[in-house]
Length: 320
Image (cartoon, rainbow, N blue to C red; front, side, top):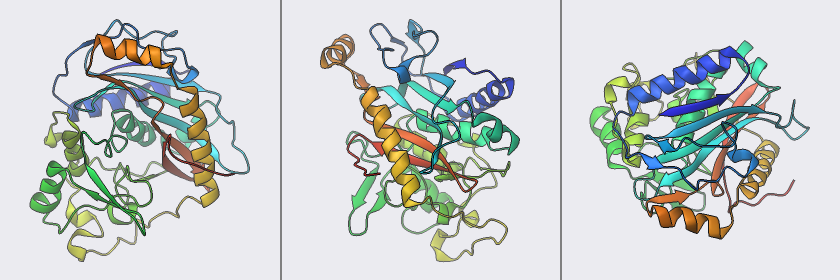
């Protein structure tokens, strides 16, 4: 995995490097290098490295940038950043290129409250497709049920960890409403729950998250997962566990906050739309390449001192 950074603070650079190092310990297999000729960097959200990708992309390439997003926020909420893949391999759904963006105004606060490293690691996994690619029909990793909306995870490697390794019943619960994360009321402060722990609190990188990356199409190293996090750490494995008093769940993001995040995400996705001729030119050179930069994105929000992730797709609708 290669990264290109356009950030000012060396603390942010170090956080990106640490996140990359950890994820490279988890994702170990080589992916075929691809020629990046023709990949668009025209949209504002696509720009990285003075508007260019490297000529050859070995495995994956992530742009990390800071920019003016919404300053200190509005009365409706505060966007801290965003992340998502731009081009993916059509069959495996593994990331070719991705971008992560953080608001210049909010970075000092994330540094001071100790949340920056966990936030960047979390968002880098979304850039690699975690959660974002689960509903793709090529993978079929989640089944959606309505009234009320709920998600069932179908990946065989996740089920192996949940049922055989952790001795839990059924399937691991996925975040209600939009999916794309583990359910926080069950997994507490695991790295890939939607509400990211602030104030330097640990966000364990569990074996279940490693298994989800394997279900997506990556070769992985289970030994790189946090060895102390298993089913006994959750609140829903076999329904026998009690939520530790020292690790209370955080309040949910308000409806107004969700609406603002969705509104902002839809604006970004609209700006990422490419002419059909450009997409056809890219895919004609390599049929395994698919542009997804205008399909989905995760928006990082702050509300009441808590940090939340909202998964936004181009089919979402919102009134604010």
